[in-house]
Image (cartoon, rainbow, N blue to C red; front, side, top):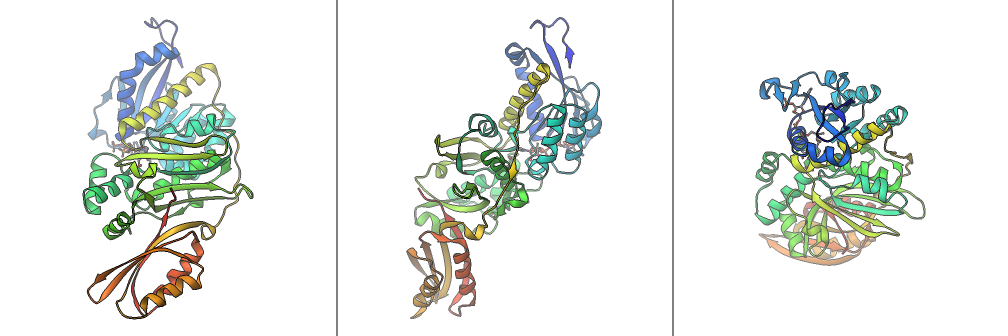
Length: 437
Ligand code: NDP
Ligand code: HSE
């Protein structure tokens, strides 16, 4: 950290930043710093100066951006003597992990947008940051531009939070919106999300729910004060959803969203953390969340329901979160202090089979006498009660769609197993959970 000489703002400390990764997020961050530098200096007394930038392919980038050298050695940027603070915006879990570790071990605060890495190795990084007395901040890692981690970590630290439920992936929400509202097919909708910079380098992470799993794992840590990693999350993505599922949901008054859910049982303290598509009633606040927007409902005993809404992906919104963290870390560095991330207890998990929900299930069956009786018998044997049903003719067959009352997931799975074995059933659609009003 250097003292700025002859600054128009008086006695400013300059914090020199190394930015590792200059793609969608990194380049939006350096542009935002350039725009806001004077305002930040006036408000905080800290002058932010991006001095080095690392990229993978130098040929795609200019040799300098706003006076910062653009190089290809990420590790050299993270450990450079003239870098006080590191922004990791390259993604991936291998080199990015080494970069963060090296920067922290060299006593440099780190700001990262890398949820995949944090959801796997946060404990290791939090420990180093704590031992060194420096910041490791990551607001941008969960829901891009929406301030969520800081409210959970600070404002809601004492709140008995029972459930966090939300749309935490912009790409899948964009795809589902385009399929629902514009009738776009899945592949074209995904291409649109990629063109707009929402998708991960490998969009499988988005569509198979892994990106959402990483985010909801990080959220669960701070909501419940327990250690949760992405591997603890039960995950189902959107790639198996069909236009037929979307249309059927709409017919019953629902829209399909990919949700991240983290629940904590009041009595036992056991947590359930999962990602799955869900039918959301059209009048539910999450139903109105469209395109790449994200929204998260935090349900606390004392606070009641809180909703956090905004742009969950894209360069500028994510850069805004990165910048907020960079300012905090820079001010803390100047004061010789750091944010407290807290400690995390070992989590006790509820099996996903024991979670309960209402469900929608579709079956293709032979259209002949006795079939409905056979099908409803399966539900009855497995203690699943039917709330609504609808039949459509498809040639000699029929499509049956059922909405159930609240049921155990294990009991629904048992129904599915039986349907697969039933002669009169030609096709079993997967079940989709239903969220209450
Ligand atoms: P991009 O693919 O757009 O950018 C990645 C950047 O990292 C590129 O500049 C790339 O270089 C650079 N890079 C890759 N490998 C190396 C390497 N070995 N050495 C040096 N530089 C390297 O990714 P995003 O900006 O979209 O995402 C970055 C991170 O932010 C990820 O962790 C992502 O999950 C997270 N994130 C992304 C959001 C978004 O909306 N895009 C929102 C929230 C978080 P080059 O340009 O030469 O290819
Ligand atoms: N790929 C992520 C998304 C980026 O679509 O939400 C933001 O984390």
